[in-house]
Amino acid sequence: MITLVILSIVLVVLYVGITIYFTKSIPISVSAMVYALPAAGKYLWTVWIWAVAMLLVPALMEKLGSYWQFLGFLFAACILFCGAIPLVKHEKNTAHNITGTASGVFSQACVLVLSPWWFAAWLILLFFVLTGKTKDIHSIWYDKTITIAEAVCYISLVGSLLCK
Image 1 (tube, rainbow, N blue to C red):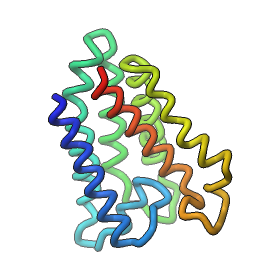
Image 2: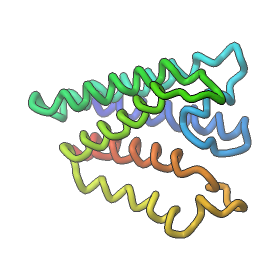
Image 3: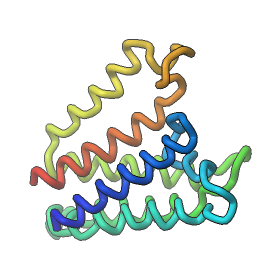
Image 4: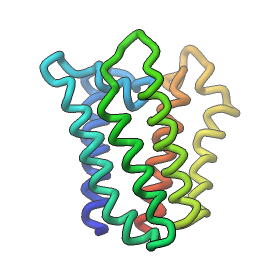
């Protein structure tokens, strides 16, 4: 199971790193990375997010135990739906926003069950907010609060899976 979690980390680092390299910036959200791809590759983002989620699910199901497995299932379901509907640009994309937020909430519910001390990862976001990095127009973190929050959700979930 740990191998799958590590493979998930590799996929995330590769895709995010390649996206940042080609766009020369940090996206405002993980979902915004879909627009960095050429038109022919738009569904690569969906395949990527689904692969990352599916690599985490076996470890979640095993480590959450039978009583809490529903949290892992809800996380996976939300992220799969979120990954299926990102291609609406410059319009309200309510379903994508709801399922994306829900996947973050359910990921943190899993963290609470697995290793609550991983909530300390939220100090990362707190640092950026308190120092004004997300509001400073000259900072690379300007207007990147969502990206930082998504990264914290992923880091704390993976960290709690690897530590459990």
